[in-house]
Length: 484
Image (cartoon, rainbow, N blue to C red; front, side, top):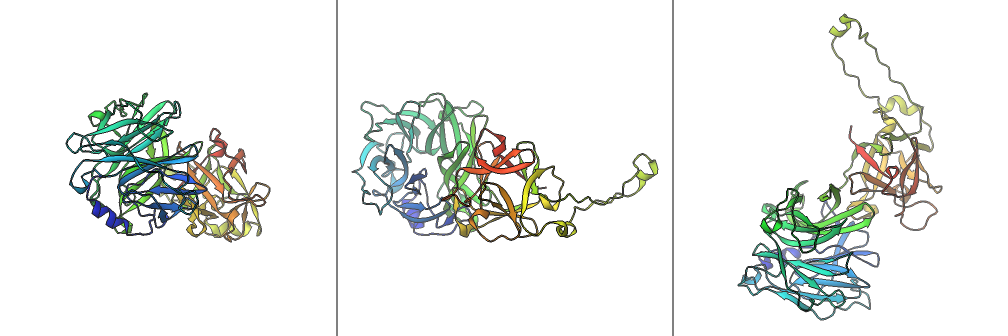
């Protein structure tokens, strides 16, 4: 984040509804998402930030003193460490940046425990050297307990320093290390024996003309070198693409990773411009997927009509109704004269041809061979007024062309009810997993207290769907959506 601070703060005064997130998700340079007492928080340039009760709908209200730019936040023990750039990035005409840290027991400004400690400087740049102290990101190494911060912009190098996880101060005698160039707004993460350096490449703060994108390199050591997928060192400009422009948003920057569950991860960022929101900068939350040890952004789940396919065997979720055969004039393929006849496409079986054979009340669900039939075609529609979770609103799942809805039962089974009523057990959470498949969870289960985060749609046998505890290591928990 290296352009005019007056422009950024002016834009921060504007709030809008984004197609990506609900509520008022306008922000620039967001920190990694942090959870505090059941709510989510992110902080941005210029002070302040956003709060969400459910991960889907966001509103202003987060508080962070000190102003400045591009903060990050990390929970360490029972406290939250905030790090931010006080100046730099060309803001105010120079690159004499300062990076500071401070603590708080809570992120909730309404809590009696809400009080930030005095900010402490951990590094600086003098405006003359080939470096700019701004855009910090934090990593608490899960293997060693050591705390690291990366920082810097295009004006020189990306640097790494070590902080004390108990005080937030810089470790005495620690010398900064240059680890990358040609990026800014970096973040460090650790996964499966690798350290990953995520950097924001391209130009920012120019609305629909911003070319920001996020790239990555990895190393077996936190100090680098960070190499990309073809062996280029990020210190020489390397980096594998994680997310670029698409879906009418451009300029993704300021990566953050949040692990929701085993195999369920999301990445946060801002989009420099949402074309559908007047080109304004908005919070972006996308599934974070992994392939061959490399992270990349998945896509938010979109409404549509699909086959819902079990990964157990590849069978499809369907209504437990009688299979109605289609009438077809069979050609005698072994007679040459039959091959001369014109080809007439076979139309799909129509809903009105079979719906009269279905029972009127509840119809259980089952799994079977997919045959393009009406009892196997599901329309999935967002229900944003029912709230949501990180990355999406809840959805209703109905048989295409009808109002018959998939629902959870008190026996932890799945059925379909004749009419969608908006009941919580008829609302579904759909999340893309790190391997690209999906888990499908009812918002609530009758007789169980609170929002369900444990039980998912589960293929207990080749033909039998049920609700069972989510297990990322079992294909019984995983589903795909096919648009045939």
